[in-house]
Each structure stands twice: as structure tokens, then as C-alpha cells.
Image 1 (cartoon, rainbow, N blue to C red):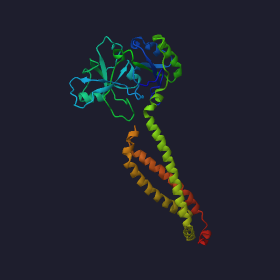
Image 2: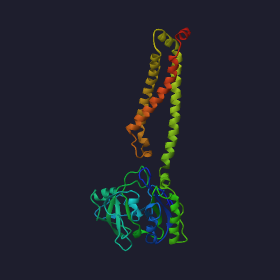
Image 3: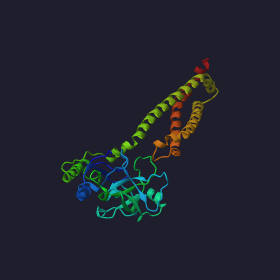
Image 4: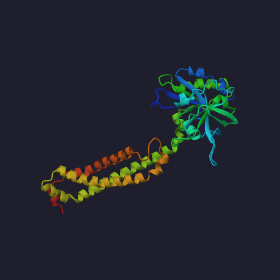
Length: 360
């Protein structure tokens, strides 16, 4: 699995007043007990500290465990290998994952305490018919775990994925010698710059084991960007093709209108000789162009609506049939078409009737 190391931003400043940080890949058998989180929390600019073994929306898929849910009989082909994350106390608050019921993990949930877990809402709906899961049990790792809390669903593997059962267990109860550890820190925007915190994190790692050093540091926004790299590339290509298509449409419409105006020069001269005003000529020419545009926009919207199923896998946070998007694109095309019609229409309105009437 690929993990970011040392420090990374874990939330957008636009959503929170503070700019969160995360980081730190290294392996240590006693990390859950020896990591000096309290010291890190008192560093200038650090608002919160936690750690886990998996970063949501990273390139890796994380780890799973084959579960047996008390009171639930799986179907013959049902997959009970569910993904999970090992997290430290404060993880949900730091990542702004709301607690929907029960309690968070705390320092008492260590290797000497009974195994516990926190599940997401989809886990509760699937295995407990949406009833309160707190106090219920399931088996994993050959142990019986008691559910002590429930949190809201989040995107775990990709932004376009649907809700899926997911659960969390205390890092201190389930870590082992090869458990990768990713520090998560939330950095106050008004305090020291994020880069200044990496020194303290590296120092903390060296105190745990002089032979181990963090691999690096990166904002989480950049780190998880790879999870939607395909969408970004596709969107960039489609945007380029769309702009090219729009340019060709503008040139084509302008050429058609300009050609028609040239053919109508004699007729326009007659109209103006009979009393037509430049404004009337403008309306005539622009009206013709906009009628063509309306037909094209209508056919384009029908084709776009019919092809929305092909785009669903590339979209997240917006519907493939969002009326606002369709209306906005139609309005943009109409505005561009109006401008492309205005130039030849303006030229036609300035035709001298006497010059036009002399033409064959």
C-alpha cells in the first residue's frame, strides 16, 4: 500500500477555519503506546493529532477482515470480507467524521481492554436493519468485538463509490509489528506554517526508533488527488474537445450567416429602400441565426441527455442530469451564437441601399 509520509493537509480551508495536516509512514511495534501525541498537540500551530493505518481516498484499498456478525445469517454468495481502518483516539473529530451514536475510542481501549469497534451507518443498515448497533457484537481476528459507536458514512476508496459497510477498531488493540502508521495533524491556519511541523514529527519518530525516519510529507488534498486522476484527465480532455467544438460551431454559424447575408444583399437593399430601418435588418439576420441555433441546441440537449449514462462513472457531487448544468450550457451556447450572428447582422444593417440595388 502507498501512504503519504510525515505531514499532509487533510481538509480544505474552505470547509474549515483550520487547515488540517496528516502524515508519517513508519513501522513500530510499540507505536500506539510510545508515540508522544500530547507533546505534538502542544506544538505551535497544531490543533489536533491522531493516527491510523490507512488514509481514505488514497491509492491503496486498505485492509479487510472476514467477519461473522452475531444474529446475522449471510446469503450463500454474500461477501463478508469488510474493509476496516485502525485508528487512534481523536481520529473522527480530526477528520470531521460525525459520530452518529455511542462513543469514540479513548486511551482505555488498549491491549488489556476488551476488543471494541465503531461501525458506519451502512454497516448498521445492512447487518442490523438500521437498528442501534451499540452493544452488539461480531467476530474478527478470532476475537469477539463489541460495537461501542457508530459514525456517518464517508468516501473510503473513491469519490464515485456508493455507501458500503465499513468499520474501525482501536489502533492500540490491533496493531502489529508491520502496521503502517500515518500521522494526522490539524494545523491552525493562523499559526506556524505546516512545513515547520515536520521537524517535530521526524524527531518524535527518531525518539521511537533512531533507525526509522518518516518517508516524506504532503498535503492530503494532493495525496488523495490520485484517486480521481482518471476523472481529472478525462475532464481536461473533454473540456479541450468541448472548447474546440464550440469554436468550430461559432466559426460555422458565423460563416453560414455571413454567406446568407451576402446572398441577401440585394433583398436587404430593397427592404431598406422601402423604409426598413437598420434595427429591422439586425432583427431579421439575428433571428435567422438564432432559429438555427435553437434547433441545434435542442438536438444537442437530447443527445446529451441520452448519453448521460456513459458519464455517471466520471461524476461525483453532481447529477448526470442536473438541470442547472443543462440550462447553463444551453444559455452559454445561445449567448455565443448571438455574438457570432451579431457581426454579420451589423454589417448587413449598414448596407447602403443604392449600392445594394446596383448589384445583380
